[in-house]
Image (tube, rainbow, N blue to C red; front, side, top):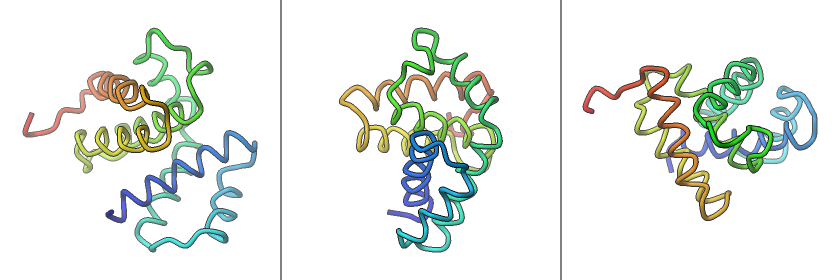
Length: 140
């Protein structure tokens, strides 16, 4: 697993902890790394994502709301919601990362940590977010 992949996995765990525990993103980041080893590149990416999602939460959640017409954000499973936040933030802020990579990584996280339907749900919502943002891979 590459550095960004492990970083995304750590970011998901931290985003989940931020939401579940009500602690600030910087506090969760500091606590997480005291208890969990991580390679420097993956760790830096995870920290950037977690802090970025926290800072841009209103815009990220609005993008998810617009793309998930049949699901209210508050009613989504916590894992799915946080995978979507991670993926939406990347789509909004990391143009150098191909759309397909962001979606594939998010789907894998959803499958690993979510329900049986999570992968398809996350894929559909993130695909709509990418379209709404005009994110098209060059080879598409």
